Amino acid sequence: MRTIPLPYDTGTLDLHVEDEHLEALVETEMAALEPDPSEEALVAAALQSPIGTQPLAELARGKRRVTVVTSDHTRAVPSRLTLPLLLAEIRRGNPQADITILIATGLHRATTEQEQRRMFGDAIVDGEHIVVHDCLDEAQMMDMGTLPSGASFKVNRLVCDCDLLVCEGFIEPHFFAGFSGGRKSILPGVCAEETVKENHSYPAIASPFALTGVLERNPIHEDMVVAARRVNVAFILNVALNARKQVIGAWAGDLEQAHAAGVAFVRQWSQCPPVTGDIVVTTNGGYPLDQNLYQSPKAVATAEACAGEDGVIIMCCGCADGMGGSHFAELIQMGTPEEIDAYLSRIAPKATIPEQWCPQIYARILHKHPMVLVSGLDDETVRRCNMIPAHTPDEALAISRELRGSDARVVVIPDGVSVLAVAE
Image (cartoon, rainbow, N blue to C red):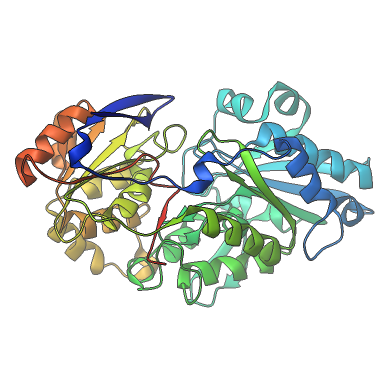
């Protein structure tokens, strides 16, 4: 019998699987990598040797107004480490720089002060000027025309009305943008609701190129890059993380060149050939990404790649913050997967409903795969989401075996978000 700890909220839940029924335990090599020589040294080295740009201190010379875009409470960016180093580099080049830290919430709720203190530390919260992006506040936005897809481009004016724009983030596989990091700090990070909705419209999500690990010809990625270039992102700092959320790689410099270097690293260490099972168990890697059900399709899309034609998917997602959005909650509970998809397919890009992309992806997956959900949500809510409720991984496995047989082959992906499950 194997005991496999699964990340869940801020801890773990144990799954027990007989050895003879365990088809595969899918973990990336990246998950076990260690910081070498240290997290701080990796970040410092990236800042000292940027890719495709001058060092940040040089870029900051003579730049009075500086905006630094960082991620919100749903992301594991180690800003306690990275932000002080970024700010120090800016001030090394210009001690008098007027710096604004802009939290890129996308369409998420506002990041609370308590969350900011956990993410950044008290010194930054008490000593720096921090603004939380609000995608619904028209007064914050500036109209920057249209993007290649035809989508409108409205973005927080703090990234336009500055002399130097810097972004930080982290890189991992992303279920429709290919990879996170880089250009995503701008779109969806600090754009108006209408821009994010059009970028995440039904046709865009349905593109055969809007997939995990795919950047070439991906219409969502292409609009994101143009948006970030148009607001003149001058410098990025992106990191890669292991399973313990430690920095194991860092890249700084040009928006596309530094991001490409990070993507190559993540692809090398996170790519695994898909292993097909009758039952596939996964998670969103625990806190902070499993705070709500809205974020959960990221890992479920990885499980889909290993679930064959009709395998059962078990998803363990803490959902301490509930469903994660009123639009998502309404859409995911509006009917069968087929009814949801039919409804969404009739919505024009400019009329896209906020958060509809996650019900769209769920509808696609639930059309083929029964899904058992271990979460903090009540059972009736889970059932209305076309999922089967369970309260422990072992209970979920027992339910799945009732559907696929006692001899069902089990594939376990402890962190589905970090795995790029594609054929070599």
